[in-house]
Amino acid sequence: MKIVIFGAGALGAYFGARWEEAGHDVVNLVRSGRAEQLREHGLTLHSEMGDYTVNELTIAESPEEIEDPDLVFLAVKGYHLHGTLDWLKQLVQKGTKVYPVLNGVEHISILQKELGEEAVIGGLSYIIATLDEKGHVVHSSPFHDLVFGPLHPSQQQICEEMALACNQANLNGTLSPNILEDIWKKYMFISAFSGITTATNLPIGEVRSFPQTFLVTRRILEEMKELANTHQVQLTNEHVEAAFKQLKGLDNEMTSSMHQDRRKGLPLEVEHLHGGALRLGKEHNLHMPYTETIRAMIKPYEAYQQ
Ligand SMILES: NC(=O)C1=CN([C@@H]2O[C@H](COP(=O)(O)OP(=O)(O)OC[C@H]3O[C@@H](n4cnc5c(N)ncnc54)[C@H](OP(=O)(O)O)[C@@H]3O)[C@@H](O)[C@H]2O)C=CC1
Ligand SMILES: CC(C)(CO)C(=O)C(=O)O
Picture: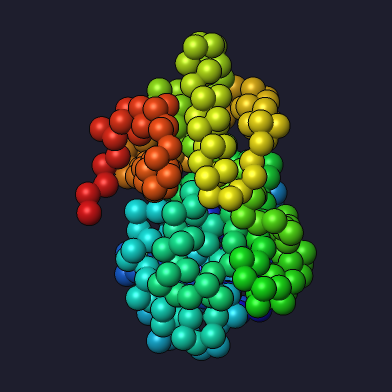
């Protein structure tokens, strides 16, 4: 498969390298700063699941350089989504589908509106990855999972090809029969997990040691379940219970990628995650006081200016 990694940061570069390792044709579509860094240092994965240095590192700095792409793996932060649309349109005109793995859901309808419903596959990822000073990937979780599935009937075949490409690579890929529900389950979980860890500036173990503080995660899960229901996604109290149990079971030192970004003083995706939930809720007159408060607490650290 010819796979374009659009957003060759921690997550994108990781999975792109795993596909390249398995023999796929991978192109990293990057801006000039990242292109320079990749040319200078190459791309290495420091990973719990096996280190790897990319042999054939292909870099493109515009879509015109890319012929016959099968798939665009979109892994930019939520606040960079609008800046990708022109290049995405050019790639879609070349016949590719787009597989976004951003946390959240607001990007899906934006992409569908801009690129057409047939072009946008449903997806998400579970991994803990970051970049070091050389731009190499540090992968620190025992999981490296991709989940994808059709949001339009015309996407079944490409999803099956993706499942094959994932099976060949050192990663876990799952073709989901209900990708929209999976995306919302992760959105519910991450809103609570990244919200509380980022707002308190504490890993989950320390949050749990203050029961009233930890209880906020349950309230956010409940609000997100209601929000999913207003969008015809049937999350239930059992899903809330399962997500809360998951939060109770995480290792003490575990924290979210948004909290890691706060620690590093990097821009935060709070507007894409919690802001997005509030905008979607407002369309249905849904009151989400816990989500609103968490967004307000994180705002001072957002550090992203349009
Ligand atoms: N990291 C993780 O462990 C996890 C992340 N996620 C989600 O995945 C998404 C990506 O996260 P992550 O990999 O951590 O983010 P990073 O910031 O590490 O990577 C994003 C990359 O996108 C690039 N980019 C942004 N805009 C453009 C553009 N217009 N053209 C080309 N490249 C562009 C940036 O490049 P530049 O250097 O030019 O700015 C950067 O390299 C987020 O939504 C996050 O929530 C989900 C699960 C886990
Ligand atoms: C919860 C986790 C680590 C799973 O991938 C994540 O998505 C994030 O922190 O952004």
